[in-house]
Amino acid sequence: MEEKIFKKFLKDRGQRLTRERAAILRKTSSSQGHFDPESLYLEMKKKSLKISRASVYRTLHILCECGLIEKVKKTEHGTIYEKTYGQGHHDHMLCLSCGEVIEFYSEDLERLQKDLCKKYGFQWTNHTLEIQGYCKKCLKKTG
Amino acid sequence: MEEKIFKKFLKDRGQRLTRERAAILRKTSSSQGHFDPESLYLEMKKKSLKISRASVYRTLHILCECGLIEKVKKTEHGTIYEKTYGQGHHDHMLCLSCGEVIEFYSEDLERLQKDLCKKYGFQWTNHTLEIQGYCKKCLKKTG
DNA sequence: AATGATTTTGAGAATCAATCTCAATTATTA
DNA sequence: TAATAATTGAGATTGATTCTCAAAATCATT
Image (cartoon, rainbow over all chains, first blue to last red; front, side, top):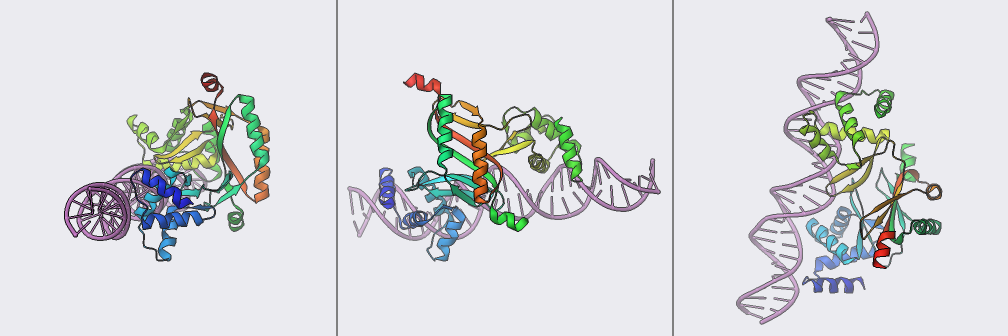
């Protein structure tokens, strides 16, 4: 399904769905959660799919424009992406130590935001909430 | 006032309030809105305050730990900071039509987030919430 | 004020993610 | 199949940030 969308998107711009692009799309589609370009590149290499860093970066860029994935955030460890196709809305906690991203969703939080918008006469379309701090694992490590 | 806070913070860690650090603090304190390390460095140079990039970066790092400034966001063009001393915490609504930024604060929202962190074993340090949509004025215009 | 210990600075090197270059390769079209 | 156009990969480049380390500044003690 994603492949069909991607192919159409490319075609409309006179671009081609190559072996490499398809491979990257497959990888991102099958990913649960988040990924970054470098890890994705290394994983593909390990599975002896031959691909270059340049192609990974280039293709992720296109997938963003296409709307199948999204930049979540730029960190010291690189840019974090997530697939958006078929994913419900959620917010993020970001660990400042290891860069791990925790997804969460709270109905209360959503409702509260909508109430606040009403109060300000603001028509909500969407939002991004990111809580920064330290994850369980890192807290255990450093005490 | 900020200088007193900074000095105490440094002293408690066996560090010194040097000429360079004081100059950077003065610059960040007097800034309205946002700034980035490179611009700050260049501005100081233009005013013939001699300072190195290394010191700018190092000092901004310390000022963050001290809580006088905060990283707002990493972009392709570098990290954006803002001073936080004397600025209450707030979140933003961003109008997609006219670009207006509405600042707001909700105690309930803050509490709810802290509760969520507890639930995930996540140690909260801070957060950024941006609600995107359309402001009152723009809604009136376009109906 | 001199001594010695400690911290800080700056210039440039190093790092690291991301982008760019361009010749070779691959896919598409006529 | 030839001509045309898009894509790839290896490595060079960029740009922000961090690191190195000798020289300079600061502090505490006499």
